[in-house]
Length: 124
Image (cartoon, rainbow, N blue to C red; front, side, top):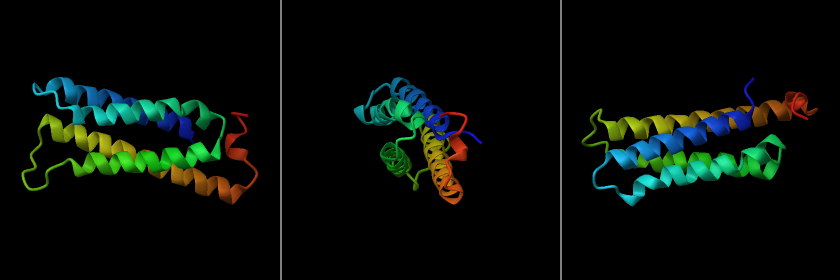
């Protein structure tokens, strides 16, 4: 099983890289394109605390990841959708966030069922 801090790191890097590609590929350089890399940096800063199994940070990162996923998906224009660079990057960032949140919730459920913290024995 992949640990949440690894998933968080991968998700944060996807947000940073895809957001910066979207920012620098657009000649207008809109400041809203930097929202995803900013949240990616915030999530990356939480990785240390996820590794130490801080429950408050677990829940905060899950909520923040869902929020970023929703913000990214809302930016897709459904009426005039076409597979261009902008929409592909938004879909990739949204899928990354939703998959990461699903893994976090799955980890919460599995840890709650076992109740003895055996999921993380190799980390402690």
